[in-house]
Amino acid sequence: MRNWVIVVILLLGTWLLLSADVLMSTTSVAGSIAAGVVVSTAVALLFAGRKMLYKNIRLTPKALVYLLFYPLVFLKALLIANLDVARRVLSPSLPINPAIVEVKTNLISPLGRLVLANSITLTPGTLTVDIQGDSLYIHWIDAVSTDVQSATEKIVRGFETYLEVIYG
Amino acid sequence: MEITMIAGGVVSLSGSLFLLLGALGVVRMPDLFNRIQAGTKATTLGTMLFLAGIAIAEPSWIPKLLLLILFIIFTNPVSSHVLARSAHHTGIRMSDKTVVDHLAKTTEQRGSESLQGDEQEIAAAKSKGGER
View 1 (tube, each protein chain N blue to C red):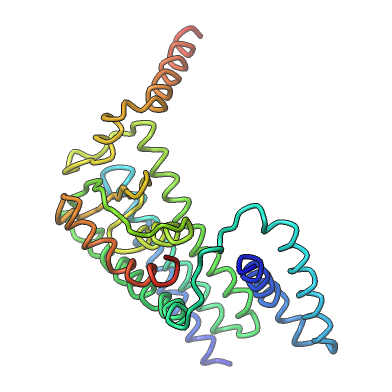
View 2: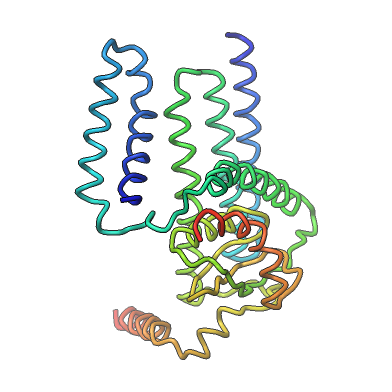
């Protein structure tokens, strides 16, 4: 049930964003939104049953707050990542110290792992190369530590504290 | 009107600056993985800022630009990850500066059949090329 509701909300949100300029100029706003609701529900009922991607997402108040807060954490990390890359690229000596390190994640749900892997890819000097079981293999442009424990602490922990609450 | 145009232009310009840095990174980095690193981060923020600049200059396009930014955030890291993963699986050589490669160790331990399969395919393709 939860899975379907979330798919409907996502589809409807996409529809509203796509048709916002039409909605603003049309006279039958309610009709357009109703059409969106009907079509989103139909599409969700037809296709969302195959992969229950959002089945395990948590909707407790704390999880919702974290869900709203996470983009800010992510954007900050993205900005730092870019300044970091800019610094490395512009300095004449090209200060890199690359390695592929293994890190462990406590996240169980596939969606949580997907968001974690994507977040790692977009943040300072790290790129997710592979996932095997609960191990993520990260290409690290400036490997400060190469053992699993401390690398996990440095790369994963910052995101995981949020994602654990949201996705479990 | 004028001010929003100028503000939007400044934001777009800063975005293109990040794109330029990303391109510079792709040229300067020593191996494929480091190039992907530079490319992914710079293009994500660069494109986001570029679209944000357009949004400031033309507020009626905000919903669609927001959607574009979301698609970029979700698809960009996935494509980079797939590139890096397939590069590692086909055994692209890493830079001499590389300190350690845990993934190679793991696949060696497992005696990964898929890797051997890949190597056989490559060898087969090479011998075919030789025959021609």
